[in-house]
Length: 237
Image (cartoon, rainbow, N blue to C red; front, side):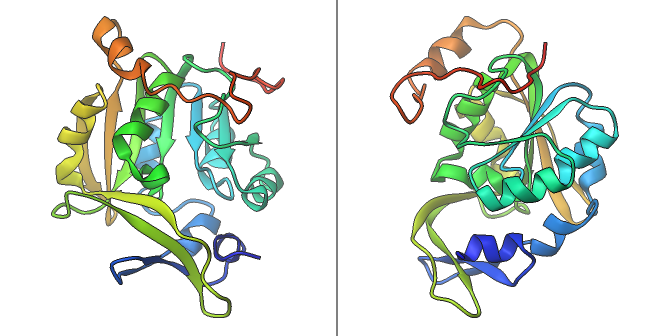
């Protein structure tokens, strides 16, 4: 079992960052029914939503309970199994692989630090932007103001096993949201601190050919080098 799976199963785990920083993983939050601040994210999802890096499915399950069409996405088989036990619809895939409903989702979630996936927030947001319908939005959780954008190498460590492999990750502070949104060709609707956490909503333009041109070169093929099918999983109409 790796360190991330230890955290998913409720054990103590943390980011061991290459610069010597240690950042605890929010395992207790992952397993809560809802956590403080989640209500803002849930209220922002008024239609079909893709939950990127859904983990054990806390937000995906909550949206389903509210009657919002939702699909969780996570590359971890442990996360996917835990999310399914909660009744959340979920696929086991990397966000950079072909996903169901591309270009038709009304909202995307990047909660619990998932803005760091891949180590480049701009590349990630451009990819997530391609999942959205025109006018759709990304609801993002951020670090508190003052840290800007940090990119680095990290690994998951626990108290009882050797640390895992190094991978690229990133951290985006609330004050850096305007810059990151602009570079990703998204419009920043708002940034707010709530319940001890920080959030922002970034919106894809409804009609803007410049957006399509600016993100087209970042398109990433699936693991076989070609776009795959939707895999039979339900997607927004």
